[in-house]
Image 1 (cartoon, one colour):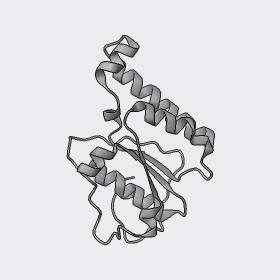
Image 2 (cartoon, helix red, strand yellow; image 1 turned 90 degrees about the vertical axis):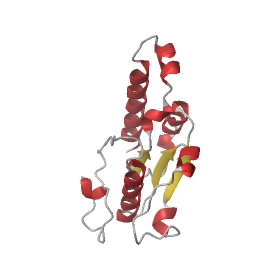
Image 3 (spheres, helix red, strand yellow; image 1 turned 45 degrees about the horizontal axis):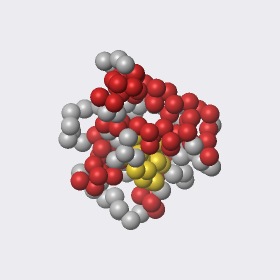
Image 4 (cartoon, helix red, strand yellow; image 1 turned 120 degrees about the vertical axis):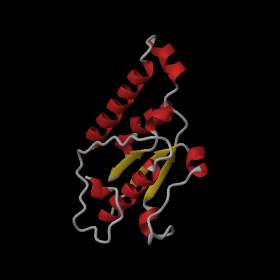
Length: 152
């Protein structure tokens, strides 16, 4: 699995398994966005399809991902990475509520800084539970997974 995140010279052996769901976690400013953006590049390179990269615009513009050496920012591969900017969990839910309308479906969907889209106070109040944020994240992840499975 790790090779899907690293820049590679040959993409013949790179395969996106359609049922893979992966959570990448780490400390702030540890390079997660750069790793998942490289995954997006590798996914787009390995197929003719598009890749969707869901993120917060302000965060991405303030700290853009590092591109691996030799990656041309104006290449066709980069152009097949569709940026979807959302502000909060509602934006993610709206995107996946309409996921079945993608034709063809994207090869990969990446959500950068997933947990940051969920406000602790709002989630606790909505679910009347101290673990409301966890509940909200699990529900949205289930929606994402179901939307992807139904689109296949």
